[in-house]
Every structure is written in structure tokens, then in C-alpha cells.
Length: 425
Image (cartoon, helix red, strand yellow):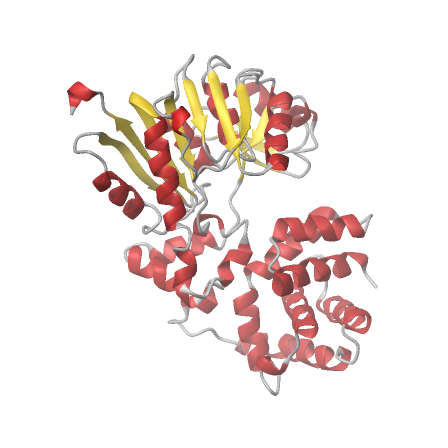
């Protein structure tokens, strides 16, 4: 039996049955099965998760007694098989059926004949399996709750957003300007056989494709990092100045702290906070790789107010925990959220963090509130609520922007607020 397929199955089972995050589940499965083709496994897992709702629609049509009578293990194999037939050019249809049957004999005994029959039916009938025009949830393989949220909040561009959320974003490389120039990085990447070009939206971003970037000499030497273009644009808009004192309240894994340090010329002081020690260790490791020495890590909970930090910082970044609806292409397990309440369960936490951010900012200082969701209740409405609570004239919005999940970007929101000096109120 193909070891890659078994690894994919185990990763998917962890996500579907145990609620595991796809990246972590895949890494754990790869750890247990040495020698697998990592890129194949990761892409296969992401693809099946991304298309699960649509795949289940087909399975329900093809199975004689419908999908509800199928237990989890054979259901996962059917999803894998149909996805392989649809999308894996390196796997012929007959091989996809064969591998699925072999996998069933290993992990779902007694279901191999059923799986063989359903997959062969799919091959015969796939051109007849038509998705109704009004079923955007099936077409884009997202829960009805997500489709409703997007169509209600963004009626004029809902389908463009849904399409964008369903397609993996381009790989964006952030050039470490402390150590390299963008043109030199691009030349090196092309020399290594990868495709690379300048981003027209950021002076430090490179749009790239090709495997092995994280294992390249450029990455190991700290000349480049991987970061979404949306995240980069938010930090560029924030623009902390050299010599400033900066607080990053929810910093791990450290990409935003690192980019702020690079923009500051590695001059000043950045305090990067997180609630987990092991995530702070990731930040320290990142800064060491990039040659950054102005970032100090601090173990703290951003929702707890620390009076000693009041009015101590020139800039405070509150990149808060959120529903993540803007990054579903890379975290496709989020597409299964089926209750509207799940999109707003973090709102009170977001408000508490923003209130603390305002409190920690000096008069005349700048706060940035950001999320990787498109849910306006977590974005604009959080800003509006907290600003209404503040003293009149204390806060002034400098910029508020929602970045849509297309044109090499992920869905992202940021709002930059100035805390006024007393005589400006």
C-alpha cells in the first residue's frame, strides 16, 4: 500500500475526528511515516479538506443509502479517492481507485467493495453530477453559515470573495532589508530555478513559486522570510519609526514583530508578547535567524491589564485572535464552521485586548488593531464599540482597510488609531 496515502488518511482523520489543525495533523502524520513525499502529502490533505463539502455532495448522490450511513473511515477514503480522480494529474483514475481500495483493506476493513463501487460510479457519472446554480456552499465547499455571512456583509463582491477564499494564495517572500536587496534575492531565486518577481504593492515583497524555499540558503541565512502580502501591507501602514518603543501584544510566531524591526532599521525596542512559552521560543529563534536584536519576548496574556505598562509605548500592535475567515485557503478546516455563533466567540477577547492596547499607548502614540478575518462584527464593530467607550476626542482613526483574498493577498483587516495629546481633545 502507498505510504503517502496512509499518511494523508491519518492526517485527515485527526482533523475530521479530533478537530486537529491541518498543519499540525499533517506534520505529526509525516513524523510517524518517514520517507513520504512531503509536498504531495501536504497538498493532498489541504485539497481534500478544501473540497470536503463538495465531495460529500457527490458521495451522497452516489451512495445507494446516502452519506449519513457511511462511517468516518470509509468516508475519508471516498473523499480522498474522488479528489484524486478530479485533481491528481500524476494518479490515473484506475490507480486512484486501486489505492483507495488498498487503503480500505488496511484501515477500514469490509468497506473495500463499497468504496470500489462508489468510485467507479463517480468515474462513470462525474459529468452528470451538476451543482445547482444557487448552491454557493457546495460550489465553493463552505458551510452555509460562512456563505450567508459573506453574502450578507459583502453583497456586491460576495462571489469574488468566496472564490478567492477557495484558492491558495501565492507564496510571498519578505526580503530582510537589514541583510539583502530585493533585486538580489530575486536573482538568486531565479538562479535556483524558481519563479520570482517583484510585488507592485510592497517594496519588500517578492511573489514566488517553487518548492524548497524554507530550506534554501537564502532562508537559512536570514535574508528572507515567508509572510502574507496582506500582513506586510498592514505593518507598512503602521510604520513604526526608528528608535521607537513598540509593543506587539499577540506576537507569535513573530513575523509582524520581525518586519517592524526591519522597517525600524533594527533601532529601538520591541516587546513581543505571547501566552505560551514555546511560541516565544519560536520568536527568539526567528529573530536570531534574521539578525534582529531589538525584540525582547515576554510571557503574558494580552487580555489581562498590566497597570505598569500604561502609556509606556509609542506604538502598540493588537493583532488579535479571530475566526480566521480570511485565511481559509491555507486553513481549510475553518470552512466547516456551521454555526454563526462560532464567528463571534472571540469578540469579547478582541475588545479587551484593544482596550489594553489603547491604555498602553502614550499620548500621541499609534495603535493598530488587525485580524485575518472578514467578519465585520470582529472588525469594524469592535473598533466602533471600543471607541464609543473612550473619552470624547481621545482616539482618532487614521486608516481603516479590509484587504480582500485575491490579487496575491489573503483576507485581512486593519485599523490604525491615534491616541491624541490632551490639548488636541
